[in-house]
Length: 108
Image (cartoon, rainbow, N blue to C red; front, top):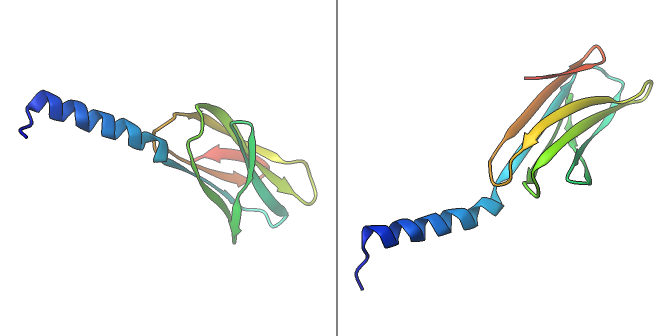
């Protein structure tokens, strides 16, 4: 069986598109405040707790939809702080990193 270039390109494109559903995104927030108790990713109608390690909360999640979301950082002594996540693109590996300091969230 012989392959010509156009057929090979089409096959590679189909295989590449089928792999898009397996792409993961990273979400991370560093909090410089001991009163932080937990953080939660809200995206695609889901609420996913972020794992904590020291002053860092993080998660890796597959792209299940396209859209915007947020990470809420909760504190023991005040209302949560929201870190707005820009547009999550289905099939694109993206990293979202934030720092919460003095009651505000900044993208880094």
